[in-house]
Amino acid sequence: MKMRHSWLGLALFAASALLMNCGSEAPPENGTAKTAEDVAEAPPVIPPEEPAEEAKPVEPAPAEKAAPKAAPKTAEKKAAGPPVVLLETSKGPIRIELYPERAPKTVQNFLSYVDSGFYNGTIFHRVIPNFMVQGGGFTPDMREKETRAAVENEARQSGLANTRGAIAMARTSEPHSATAQFFINHATNRFLDADQAQDGWGYAVFGKVIEGMEVVDAITAVPTGNRGPHGDVPVEPVVIQSARIVS
Image (cartoon, rainbow, N blue to C red):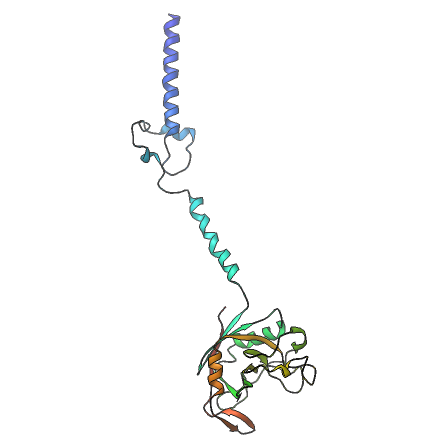
């Protein structure tokens, strides 16, 4: 009698173990492990003869899907560089790269005028071939716009030269009098640099044209004349339609 009970107990234990082992091998549908309570309430396990592919999860885990999202941030950091301002003019676009690490106060001053829309609708009011084109201070009717306080002349410390395509601040005979007006060098004008200027200060370069020098060439080709006390003024206004930061 004792032997019969022993065999019966062993048989029940073996059947229970088999059911539990088979249940733990069945893949959960949501891609996460089930608890002991879930396994106990689950329907009969998938028979061994079922195709193996049906036992594999179809969708990757949520963490695997989220991983690629970090890539664009890395790309943005690599793409970061000097600020670029686009001047849309009546003769075509001019793209200018700025150098805040070399002339920080001058670049900040220029960008503040760009951000405020100050240059929109102003003109290149002084144009001299093989020298420079100057703008950023007058409207087409030759009305001078009101500006903010002057910026410190950084020509001595920047180490930047007035080469062809370089953009620099216009000023009076006072070294620290630049406000909003700027000029683009049509030719290399080293005599405007601090180390060669007669006053020892020169004109502060803060960037250069990276696209659109052909537009600068076209501006220098326009007919010019006198408008009141101003000379070298284009007969037909060359307008800066807009100025905006593009990168």
